[in-house]
Image (cartoon, rainbow, N blue to C red; front, side):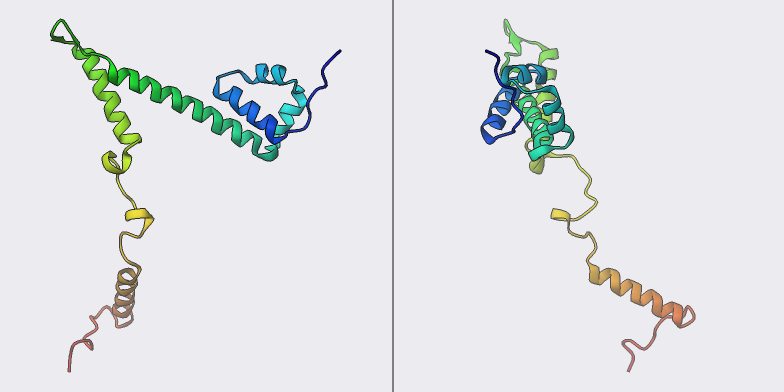
Length: 154
């Protein structure tokens, strides 16, 4: 007896798909394993039905991140000495890996970045200071390029 093809994306099915994506199973194999029609899968992806496409991308990113983290652990845990001698090439790889981790995972403390805004996206120059300079420039212009001498004089 043939199994019925799945056409409805339920929460239970979404969890099964997520599990398989995280295991690295190819999309075609997932469709076959879970008995999902090609057209149904394509519609879910193309229309981003119930955030399906966004979820696939997120799950793939999660899987790759976990693999990268595992590899980073392996690289950092490798012995870089042999018979008391330092393997400089392996040490160089470990140093670059450690630097990459600091710049990405611990970027708040180690990142080499150039801020174009203040902390947390705030302005570098306060709005009031900008407005005061603009007002002063307008006043100079309106006075025929003469400085405003009314301030501070009594």
